[in-house]
Image 1: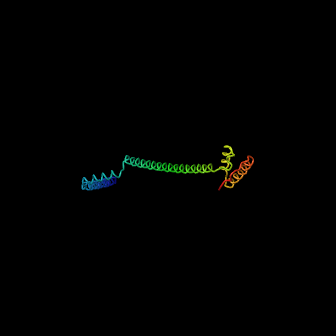
Image 2: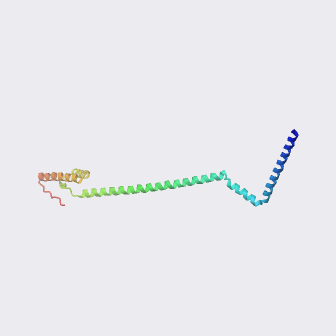
Image 3: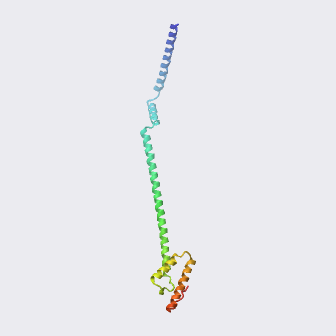
Length: 166
């Protein structure tokens, strides 16, 4: 019985060896049928499919450099916009200052009733009160008080004051 088993195993092993050899011969025939060019193309294509770590690193580096350029561009645009806003704000502030100076000059150039009977300090004080007045009504009250004070001074000094025109 052992001999039979041994013989059967030997036959099975030889059958396997024969079929493996036939399979190897068939693959060799197929490969032999391919031209050298086809094999080279397959090698190139397989290399192209496998991206080298250097190429990946280069692509990553290129992408990072592009991101840096984009960020720099955005930063420059933000700085330009900030500069433009600052210029606009400076221009508006200068216009406000110019208007304030013009109003002040107009106000100073107005004739102050009874100014010939006032000291320089009184004139400056009167102009300051007028400038600090919060409303037209308050300015009108300051003018009325000033007018009464100047009329009183004129009577005391025996001077006739011209009533303002307009």
